Length: 472
View 1 (cartoon, rainbow, N blue to C red):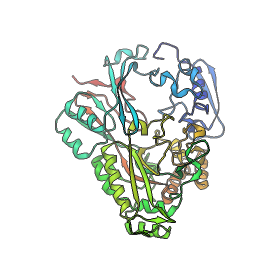
View 2: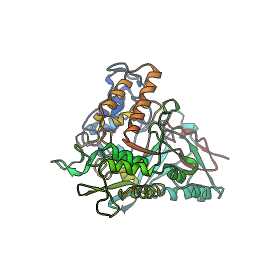
View 3: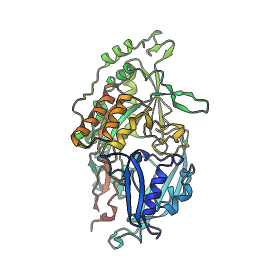
View 4: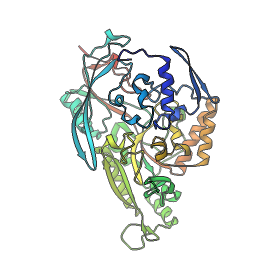
């Protein structure tokens, strides 16, 4: 490890115990449900035994969702206090650079959330296997601000070398590139910008104060006709135009790798069809205020997403689209560190989903879609009982979908398994369980003198930072 303690099989055993401990509330448990036991054969060898045949045997302990953690650092936090482990902000790893300082820069009040902007400073890891090859004496990761600020810093001012996830309008990116300081780097992966529909009621509380509980189905969105109306009312092509070269309208939730992409789906923009579906579902404008209602309840939905110029513009398009069919939308914007974060303390996260609709981008983190598509199974519903660690944030539950997923978990024939994942995607789209908007490429910014960047959709963009260097 980067602190000099030996990395052994004990760390692998501890990682398994930590991730599968319900008190910890790990968001990676889905990849380990098929594991029966893990034993150490010696200090450098482990044996993983699965409960049954497992075509996705490579997921545990591998990739961004399977990283091994050091027992000597986390042992005291193998419990409900895991979220407070000091190493969460001071990681000990085996990579090229190790953390030297985690510095809080400012504390800001954004909306109703308190947000820290941070600076994390790394130095070469003296324990790294090829220490002599490292080219940087220091690496600084800056958090805070917004995508426009980051894009300007790397593409125009050149005060940073690299910026990640520049979800900025196409016209602005092209303008900044003309400065000749930096360039935009695009590569396609698995991420889909989508509107999630809440299948639980965010307006009701359980006896112990839990909202968006599976105990209470959503009073509006559990009607398939309403969901289908919303899906066909969205002008996805107009939204895709916001992304320019980095986005394309899609009807699919599963978009990579290519063999898993369904050819059976089509997205549709048809306001007349949307109005007819809402009429059929009994939602009509009885009082002439341009908002449909039913049994005295207006068809009004709260729609949340993160602060981001492209997402805010998307929200505006969707709000106008829905207004045209008699659906009122109340917009809510949340700082991305809160909305996209995994801290269970904040109820403004996408995991808690305390609204009717929410928008974000997500996709499979590895070429096997299993750990991604499990996020629509009943058992994965994010709830208070699992510390909101379940990956099914919409609380969708469908026995037919569960059956398809369970079949995929043991199907060893690659072609049959491929068809099962396509069927899962098609089922979700047919019942409008989610509204995919845009398949987007990862957009990064690099200063022109940075070399060695070699991105992959199946790992962190900095997976090979050991080979990054500055051109002479």
